[in-house]
Image (cartoon, rainbow, N blue to C red; front, side, top):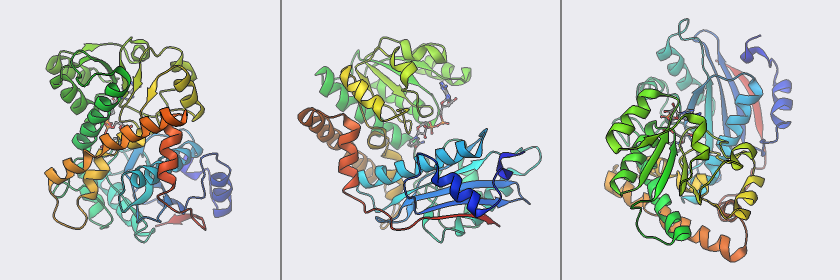
Length: 369
Ligand code: NAD
């Protein structure tokens, strides 16, 4: 049975959602179908106490509906923390589209239909680009919805700003842990050379860092190898590279009990969301004296850039200045972590949680367009 058909009623959907460990009294969880266009998506709005839930839309192939649901619940919660920590007037939300068979369905129709799906949330969720989606997809969503950020004629691709923020975070972490102001000769192992990873490698190379890189795509590896004199390795070997920094810039949960045993770095700092498979891994890292840079703090550059669309006219220089604030924010977390003898993610969560109020009710429903 196709996974989009595995749940038929609101009651079944509610019980699946509420039974998942990542359900955190989310304000909305919507499962939205449009059989005509082939759109099947989940939208989760974790919290709106600071403003509408803003976060990207991911297109991905999932084996089970519960996997997609777990992803959207975790990612939307992460956006609440990220947006609050960055002092943005945004709450947390995220969407996942279950990748349809594009030989049967038109991609532009799927995304135009997703625009209609956004209207179901009445402005409580605003979308943007994420893994698997493109500027063209965003333009198709925009045909049917104004609840969208990061269009090409506004703040555009957030990735260079995310990469810049991650670069600043790596500098701050290296300074704190390795006591050096310069990245010259610092060895960084970068996993994932997509939109963010490629820009990050460029900035690190310009700053004199040594790079070892990997990706599952050979063309991406070749581009970075040729342009930035990077060493390369097979995807699974990146965890065993003896380097100063491991920079995860692909998918989540790459720091887990298996990879923990292989990692030989002093700092973990990268762009991926939900880098730790569980929060208890953070304690392990602390015991091993590995400085973990909380993902939602270091990778906020893109959303900070997007937020500069609101209010006045968008200005890239102003956006860059806003991204610069990631450095002092991280420094404060590192110092507090040392002072309180707690892991960095626990310190960051405490700071973020003070910046939003919990939800009073949850709305969990299936919608057919
Ligand atoms: P992307 O899809 O452009 O790049 C991801 C890269 O990772 C691809 O090149 C892919 O081939 C590679 N990859 C996938 N699995 C891999 C594996 N097992 N080993 C090695 N490489 C692998 O995505 P992106 O926009 O560069 O984002 C990277 C990460 O950063 C994602 O987790 C995303 O959620 C997060 N993030 C991105 C932004 C942004 O502005 N784009 C903002 C915040 C967080």
